[in-house]
Length: 469
Image (cartoon, rainbow, N blue to C red; front, side, top):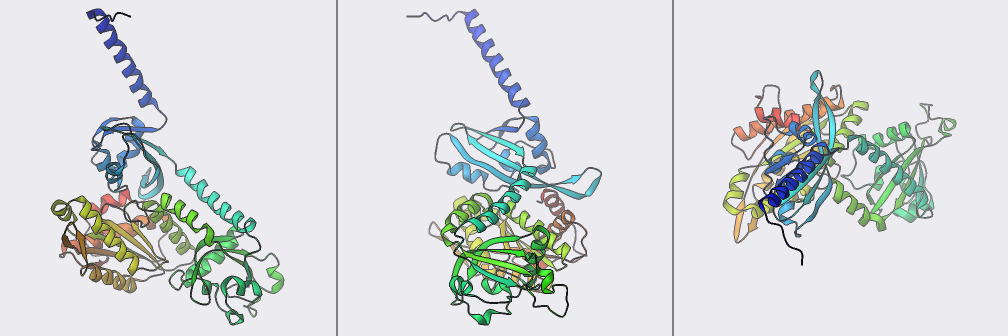
C-alpha cells in the first residue's frame, strides 16, 4: 500500500501543480481560435476569451457582458428555455445555431455589413455551461449555393420518370399541354395560357414572384424551389419546380414583340411528397424558432435580403410589420414562464392563421414577432395587421386553470423601390417599423401604427437597428 505524503511541502507542491495546470488551461482558452464563454446555469459569465468578447460586444452597446443569456436575448431568446429543458446532466444542448448580426462598416455609420455567428452550447455539469462561438458568414454563403446545387441535381437524377414537363412563354404562361401535366397535376388542356402559378396554392405566390423566378433563371441558368403544389381537384402535394431558359428560345422569336406566346422556358414539376419529412426536418433544425415553430431570425433575414434584392431589380413595395406582446413581463410574473410560453405559442398560431403562405412570419426576439409581406403596400399591410391585433384581443389562453387574455401592439413600415442598397434597406425597414411600434405602445397599446416621417425617434429603435440582421 502506497503511503500518501500529506506534508506541508507536498501540499504546496500539489497546489502549485494545480495552479500551473489552471493557468495553462486559461491560456489555452484565451488563445483558442474560436470564441469560448463559460457560464453558470443562470447564464452568469465566469470566463470569456477575447474572440467571444469581440463577437458579442455589438449585442451589448453598454459594454456589459456579465450574463450570456442577457447578451443574446434579442437575437436568441430561447437559450435559457433550451438549457432548462435539456434532460441530461451533461452534453450538447444544441450545435451550430446561427445568429444574424449587422455591424456598421468602418468609416460609415449608416451602412451595415451582415455577419452570421455560429453558437454551440454545451452543458458541462449541473452548474456549468460552455458556449462556443465563431464567425461563419462565408461558410453560410457557400452553404446556400450548395443547397441550390443539391436541389437542382436531385430534380434531375431522382425519379426522373415521374415529372411534368411544360413550356412557358416569357411571361411565365403555359404554352402547351401534354400527358405528363395531367399525370402529375390532373390539369387538362384548358390550362394553356395560364401562368405557371396555377400549380401553386393561391396565397403562395405573387405576380411579381412569378416573374422573379424567370429572371433568376435568366441570370443563373435555372431557378428551383420546393413547397406545396396544387392539383386540379384542389388537393395539395409537396413538389419541386425547376425553371430553365430554353437554349433555342431565340429561334422561337423571344425577341419578337408580336409573339409573346413563343416558348422561352422549360418547367419541370415533380411530386416529391416522399421527401417532405426529410425537408421539414432540415428546415426545422436550421430555420425554425425552437418554441413557436415560426421562422427564426436566420430565416427572416435571409428572406428579407432575397426580397430586397428582388425589389432592387424589379421595383415593388415591401412591407414589414413588427408585433410585440403587451405587458408580457406582467404575464410572466403573474402566471409563470410556462404560461408566458403558451401565450407566445398562441400568438404564433394567430399569425399563421392571418398571414399568407408567401409572407415570412418570424419570431425575432423574446416577445417580438415580425412579418415580411412581399408586394404589399401601406394600406393593405395596415389592414391585415389591424385584423391580427383585433383577433388576438378576443383570444384566451388556458394555463394552470386560469384563462389569460392578452393583446399586441404593431408597427408597420413599407419600403419603396427608391432605396439604394439591400443593407440599408433592411436597417431602414426595421428602424421605421420599430418607430411605429413604439408609437403604438405610447398611444396605449393594443393597436397598430403605420410609420410616417414625423414619428418620434426612440432609443430602443436605434439599439435594435444596430442589432438587426
